Image (cartoon, rainbow, N blue to C red; front, side, top):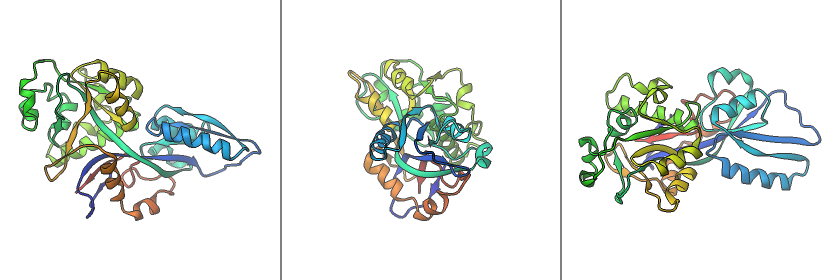
Length: 302
């Protein structure tokens, strides 16, 4: 989690900064080097495209298609020598710090809170107090007064169905960073200790549904009404743009009380607000501290 102050940035954006994780000790390059990468699903599209270009430009490398799994699996793959590099949305795990890994920030994007409320055209607005309570099940209907406060149109919503949370793997970068963000909101709102300090908290909720990967979450959010989940910008677009889709992304509340929707402009503004010194001074250090440069970030600018 990064909590930064920026004079230029006045938006709350759920933003992702993916990174390349590479070994920096004991590396040798044979004549025909194999470039095998994998890990986080968020950068799958841009990394796959980049590796195709790389293979065409440098004939001495045998490029293997990017293997999508999750951030932690990517880090572990590099540390174990199974991957030459990995995409990761989170900082290096503490148990891998000694493995000689380096982190290079590479791609910024968005993590969207995505929902399915059939028949509702107006955007759903979720306040800083409401969002954590939806994901922990304390708010479980769209007609809860705390939701209606910012979404009065839901008073006429005919369904009495309960809200179901679609969760992803606990080693997914999206899950790890959602936990971090919801913890921050709880602390801000005086909910201490936050249940999200337990990294397995979402997994323990019997009211939630498990998606084995982001692709499954896309299918589930589109097929199951009255659900809510968290998706990177590529997966969210796929769910929202599907034929006859009733999926949309929520507007989230900034600390000044306004509600901000995800857009390329808002993500760019958030990333531009990160001080250059943080990127330059921390990005190349082995065993980077996730508190100093989170690589899939729920960036909270004040």
